[in-house]
Length: 240
Ligand SMILES: O=C1O[C@H](COP(=O)(O)O)[C@@H](O)[C@H](O)[C@H]1O
Image (cartoon, rainbow, N blue to C red; front, side):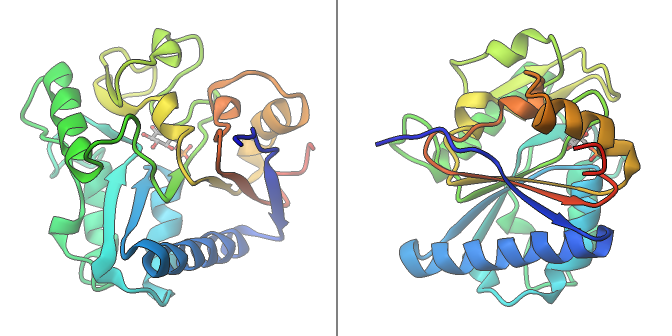
């Protein structure tokens, strides 16, 4: 039977504790998935999530060779560009962990955005053959100050996209404008979705989503048959 979970909240003292909680969760879920199925599929986000993971993941114990890494969203820029999320993980994890470049399932930044979304969906489908919707072991998500998650922005038509796994966005309110993003049916089919955030700057939006239950993009992450975890430091949770 499927059930919509209530978010589990883990509130810790400060940013370094958020990183520790987050990376302990990744360690635990990777080891469970590898034990159960021989592989671990994880979706990454940019911004502060990338910063947290690049600090914490090099310290965990896992069978790195069994990982496949995907992007919950990615900005359509060359991999050499500062806005590229892949660039952050390449610099922060490859060489600092046993992960190899070819374990990352990356966009083709040379395509125009609709073609890039299609191409990325094909790459994801190749890793989840014969699935109506992919079931990622873990999706790690951020939340922007407007409540967006991945590249799903408030009031954007993509919030209602239910036919594709990966969508193109041409008009992201946060630059750069062209991105590709996982859609809700993919996000909400994951075994676990986890948000992690720190700092006073997140407090108002955390209250609106977790406290007041506003239907903003991050609040619409509700895995239908999986876990939902919000890891917050005291500053981010201070208005709850
Ligand atoms: O643009 C993006 O922003 C969100 C939130 O980033 P944060 O730095 O405010 O945590 C991020 O999750 C997403 O992957 C990224 O493309």
